[in-house]
Length: 407
Image (cartoon, rainbow, N blue to C red; front, side, top):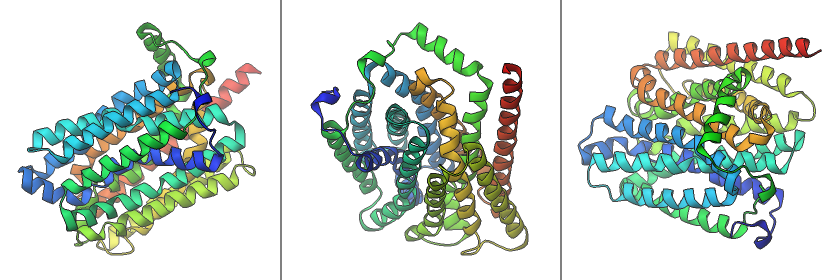
């Protein structure tokens, strides 16, 4: 069933839609149940801090498993990894839906983390298997733009499901979503990684190759740049219950006020990145993105220093930040994948590990500390942007040094 010869090839628009839908599993898993936090806590007798751990435990298991999704797909092909992960995810979503106490919910959230990352990790490798250069950047940008819909609509769906049917309906929605995806992948997604290009899965080789990746300073810089860029926005995502309920005084039906502007920025930035692919170098595109992110972070800190939280001013800097973030992401991701062309799946996994690990720290450690203050959130976003910008500058400097030595 895993051979491409048994399946109709997909046109690029259909492939982009499917890869984006697979990537959406992660945002749906995080964002859909955020509006239900107070209601789950009340029914399962959990504290707000414990509810925050349902995010961080998911993200930490996601981080660990991303080290293997790409590597296994390098060995057995892209399709089997996606199909197996979707099946595990479906079962874990059922477990969350029927959880009778907090410990059961936490355990099934950990299992969800083991499976949820395969779509985006293997999807990046599929893009690089299929295309190179500007076409690859354009497809990556299209996937990012479509994928960006998920964090905007997920909390809206979750809020309406919570209001109409209760929090368990949110997880039954995830069951249905993953089931439909499994069927589409099984019957439509071609295999893009032929047997002749596969690398046998051996633990010794695995650790040796990860050692090669870990010793590559430029790859580490690029992966951390992506993670810090994203965490500046993700901080607001995982702090959404505090932002919506406490800072802005809204209800479970109002999460769109935070998520729609933010994700509109993600989609707008991805669109701009795709349009600029033939006009600017990846490095120049990233520079423009950082100018936008720096402006957003500065405006955010200034507003929160002077005025109290209010719509739309609390969310507009977040939208501007995500435009810059999304402009930089495709270019930096492709630069990272090109560091080790023969290990693209593993490189994608390594990138995903850094992304998810730092996101887990953001959700479990940083967010509980700063989410009660609009100024605290703004300053933390600015810190993430500054750290990412400094790392990007260091990467560019190192590239120049290596180029001079090679010449």
